[in-house]
Image (tube, rainbow over all chains, first blue to last red; front, side, top):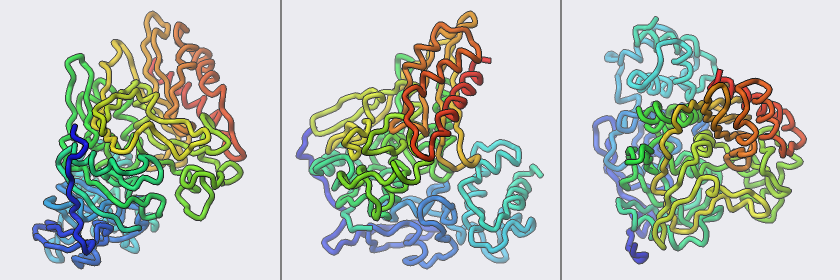
Amino acid sequence: MNSRTQFESATGADGVVHVTLRINGTAYRLPLDPRATLLDCLRETVGLTGTKKGCDHGQCGACTVHVDGRRVNACLSLAVMHEGEEITTIEGIGQPGALHAVQSAFLARDAYQCGYCTSGQIMSALALLGEPCGPKDADVRECMSGNICRCGAYPNIVAAIQHVRGKS
Amino acid sequence: MRSFAFVRTDDVSAAIAASADSSTAQQGASARFVAGGTTLIDLMKLNVERPERVIDINRLPLDRIEPLADGGLKIGATVRNSDLANHAVVRRDYPVLSQAVLAGASAQLRNMATTGGNLLQRTRCMYFRDTASACNKREPGTGCSAILGANRTLAILGTSEHCIATNPSDMNVAMAALEATIHVRGIRGERSIAIADFHLLPGDTPHRETVLEPGDLITHVTLAPPAPGSRSCYLKLRDRASYEFALASAAVIVTVVGGRVARARIALGGVGTKPWRSTRAESVLTGEPVSGPAFRKAADAALHDARPRSQNAFKVELARRCLVHALKEVTL
């Protein structure tokens, strides 16, 4: 290969990277510090605070969002890496009065206590419905292990998910 | 997190050029590739990693799994862990690899983490992650806080007086047992490296973890065709049932003919400073009848050189039993 191959920095002289992020179906043209995580960008720049910051190190799952339909930890991803991808947050799946089935199931099964982890739990649960996950409660627990609930609402979270899957 | 310039490209040559002026590809590198980001961004937040330039390689055409003409498999560097683990051919021909990947991290992290990134996964040693602590891996020459410190989760094989950090990867253990080949492209062209030669023992240079040089980009990994008649599995033991690093793990691939072990490939995780292939255990086991005592002899051989520290002596027996159990799993 030619070792003199040129590359171009996306970062401007002002340290800013301009990207367009598609969030819940809306395009946002954003000037971003490349250090901004997708999580901080959603909460601080776009103002979508439904996605929560727990550990900020990929260990709790509170920040779970979907990128092109797959669940990821928004805290361990740079916002500038997601130009052109479809980002879905808790605000994008349902609204008061028009809840998603997973949200309704969490309500019906009392699948939370303090609620801080809940948006991450719901985004994870929604993604799980389209993943290879076995039928048993134990399978759901394994597939949901990336979402920590310090209140310990796990039994009801599993019940809510199994309800949506028609396994309860 | 320190400021950095963000570079994005869909061209492999441009990505390599953008990283080639770093003084090292090891700890202290001024340029880093980012794919999933699950290790790098975590360590950048802790100021353990302080690259001046971050090169986004997610748009490079390295995200495919393709069968090879010889019956083997080619796995692109940016193939996500979840896609690797759930791929039909991987599940059928290399169950040890699928199981190892699924034993690691969480569903979210597996959707992000890549094959190349996992080969370069960094240790979870708490002193490496804490810039207030002495750590020869992070800051060469500062000493090792772990040897006399909280070392319960740290390595017992391949350690030195300078570093006892564990390689935390599950995928790497399966790759070691599968004798994977790692393909790298750099400023001087392409080369391939056996996984046994890819990771370095800490010795007196624990900051050097792999043979990669500035500009080197892992492009893909290749696997040989599965050994005919072999069975494989990955067994991982840890403090909680999921979403936790291994205290000890075993990847085994065994072919049994007429009640005797005709061929064995054995690697251990959670106990070594690198993915720990044990050719000694393989030799001890080959030709032996399938039996508990033979498995125990192989496990004794695998742990023969173990050097436990103040808090991790339990890992010696844990790793032995892990290996014995894994061998029973694929043979009985």
